[in-house]
Structures are given as structure tokens and as C-alpha cells.
Amino acid sequence: MINLLLSCDQCYFRYLFSTVLSAMVSANKETKYTFYVIDNGISEGSKSKLKKIVWDRGHEVLFLDYQNEIENLNLKSSFPLSAFGRLFVGRIPGIKRIIYLDCDMIVVDDLTKLWNEELH
Image (cartoon, rainbow, N blue to C red):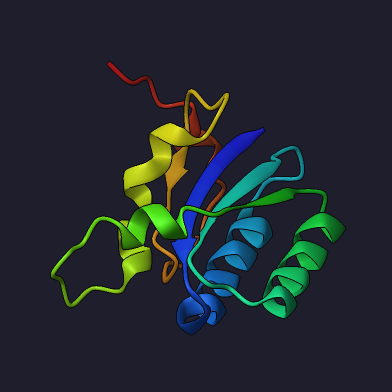
């Protein structure tokens, strides 16, 4: 299982949906992903839609709520708060390795080679 992390709010959900879908479409038949989505205000309807398409294709999706922690950063930035979600990657229990994807990316190849890259 390859772990992928994305961070999103409702405004960027359609881009996140495209990124997740492109990763699944580009995956080899043997490749299975667990999508960890740092949820900064995604609606229940949007989450349900994403869960259905991900689970129907044999992958997993988990939503993580760090919204209070992100808001408490007290940042003065023009970036949306969801852009800072990656700062909390170390708080995901039981995860030793994960690939972070911006939610406005299109994946054009299976991510197994990247996942298996030796890290020093």
C-alpha cells in the first residue's frame, strides 16, 4: 500500500478530486493507494463522493482534521490555510513513509517507482 498525502479545503476540492482520480487511473493493477486528506473544511457531500470513487476502485481514503491546529498557527499569509496542512504530516500515526501531492496536480504514471526510491 502506497501512502499519499494531500491537503485541501472545499474551494479546491474539485482539483483534489482530479488529482486523486488521475493517480488511480495511472496506477498499475497491483498498485493500491491510501489517500490521507488533511481536511480543512471539505463538505460531507464532497467527502462522500470521494470515498465512493476511491473505494470502488479498491483504494482507501482517510480524512484527517487538523483545522484547529492550522488556525492556531496564527499565520499572516495570503495562502489558504489548507496549504499549511503538510506541516502536520508527522502526526499521522503509524506512517513511516508518505508521498505528498499538491491537490492541483495531475498524476500521469504509476507512483510505485517513486515510492520505492531509496531515501538516504
